[in-house]
Image (cartoon, rainbow, N blue to C red):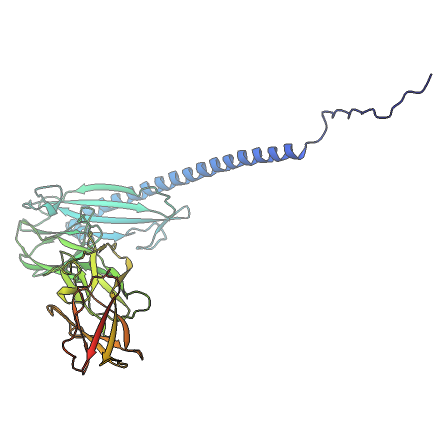
Length: 447
């Protein structure tokens, strides 16, 4: 018998036992699944911890708000002067520190700094819910007390707020006490809280901070004419003034409502004069004009250019914005020249840059048939109404060796002249230009 032949026979690999290792692919899948589960677990733990922290913060804030109201009630009822003293301190921050704390500094609980703001306001009877709705005062008005508590890392949680109404006992307040209510609204026409309003007159000077209804309320023991005013650093009123004021006649036993102050943080426009590449801005800079129907008395305001870029600060942030164009002449208004205005809206306290384009014009100066180099070209507006001193005439620049000046002009029609020279016939006039006009060419011939 021959020996069995093993050549060419495939051998089966032995099966892995239960204690065999993982393949690389299996290991990678296991790691991915572990990472997903771990991430979800960590996210859940983080959310739970953050929720727990915020809950503890809110409980502590609620306790501090309740504490402040209890202290206020004690001070209000402690003496006959308690109500008027409390009303005089109408807007304060952290007035009652915790043990070992300092008045005016945050209240620290479990290493978290809480800020307690208290706002107190007289509530004489009026025609609505606010004293700034007007109406007649009552003999014994009440005091509204609002306490708001905030803390760092609130993560979208609303501040804790507590309110109460305190009524002075009869006989504490004089029956001749009068009240003055001054409303303050922002650029959007909404009540503006936290704004300091000062009232000065026969009874002295006092300051009240507007509450959430945008109303500042003053108690007046001496009747007469008072001046109400508002000033906030960086603020501006409807007419562009940093300080706004009005006269109010205060009467005994009466609630007098003043006019609403329209006041907000000032806006700034950085206006840059531009034109097409290869053309230059006029040597004598044209004025800049701002347009808004609320600008008194004409709906426009003209200011001088201070360079290629001019900052226009102290602007009231009108909700419908401003239109801006180059030139103080009425003919330079794009709408008057047959074009349109484009509005730029700037938010309160914000700064925005805007480019104002001048129409590019190529001026060729000749004398006889020869190019005229070194000639100063000026432009005279066809209509001089409203033009500033630099615009009648407007100096454009000096021609180069080829007698050419590539310059630019505000909107409107302009007569081009060569300074100190006489025309050969009459000086030419440009077509009516617009800020978006294509480049045009004019030849100026001197005699």
